[in-house]
Length: 384
Image (tube, rainbow, N blue to C red; front, side, top):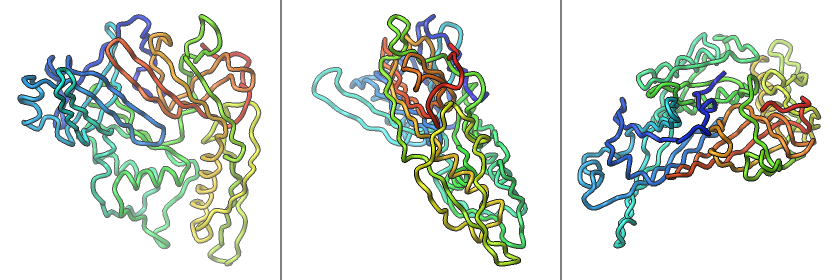
């Protein structure tokens, strides 16, 4: 199971402590005065997108940040920041990234001057320069693995899943070539195969897992989100939407280079990429013809058809918020979770698309979004 151990922390045993570590490449804990100046932390992680953070610090005239750290460049862009949370003896990495910008807000009122630091996860380092490269004789997953190995110095460990439809390279037709940044190239290959790409921080400080593969919709679900269940409720609010126009029935034509005849490719099963979470599947209301598939290799055209079928499958979405201390655990994105108390149509398992962590002294709130492809739970009982 892909994860950093956060969903296993029993926050109900509290208290929750946050730790900051900073450095140019290797990180170390910040001085206690800096940790005590932290006013708030907001961290957002979304499936298939770059994670980001924003930290706010109390800024005093004679404090260490104003006196030394800012002039010395300790909060300059590209400085690495790691955020961990701990409960008693257990801890986990919440974020690992680099500063993009900082802002100083000076005020005449004592205690109102602030330093706001904004940044993104380590995929930013993959998106800073165009890199021309060729990959003769390499499949998409082999190319991705080669790209990700360039970032081992930052503790990045690749986890690359072979594409569902094998695409053996044919150098007589075309040698795969990269012209954009590493991040753009890896993301492009992921979308072409119906995959997702992201960095998962941890499990140890200074390490990240670079995942390239299908969305993680299998395995043991996280602790259930309970709503409208009186004292057993763990979620403050939860809203669902059903968009009947979201799902598409894509079509793709492929031209045989030998006979010059084109044929309509058969629709692929999407279960390998999107294991069903709902019992009642949603029919596609839209039909779309993919462009550019006729002159591709057949395997590439089939992969494009599978990718589009899978990506457009989710028609049910949910959004909500929770208090982590009430929920008892830290909800994690890019995994599945159960929902209870919302009614027969919307109870069951969901994929967690995004989570935003909002931390302040004495408060830990989360906003989240969920998705799945149909209505009604597949199982009669939602795992707790």
